[in-house]
Image (cartoon, rainbow, N blue to C red):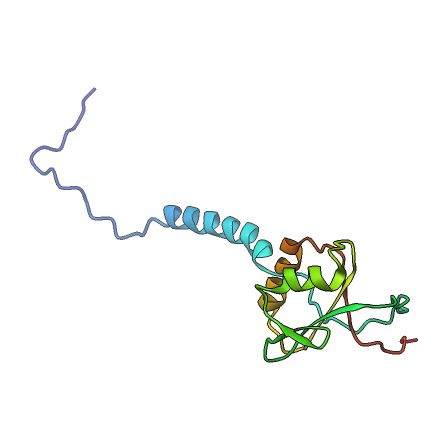
Length: 141
């Protein structure tokens, strides 16, 4: 038995084929990552908020209306008020009754963040009963 060893030439022969196995492995891992992440990045439900067709609740004897106009001015009844003075003005108007329902209405053009700022001011003042006022529409059949 004999063994033939090649002596002298340590250079390996050039391989002209592309090894695609690592590339396929990377692509499969990325595919799995995107398959998992894609549903988390999209919203499944498109929301087009309709006007309410609910029957209006009975109106209290002296309702307290808080309004936000399109130019972000805030009114309590018909008096202008600032967000900073909202708690004190509400306390004076409601005789410090924190369980009074505040009817909150806003123009369509008011930014959602501004609305949440007013709602946070109401909550900070202790007024947790807030009724949102909207337009009545006829019920669709």
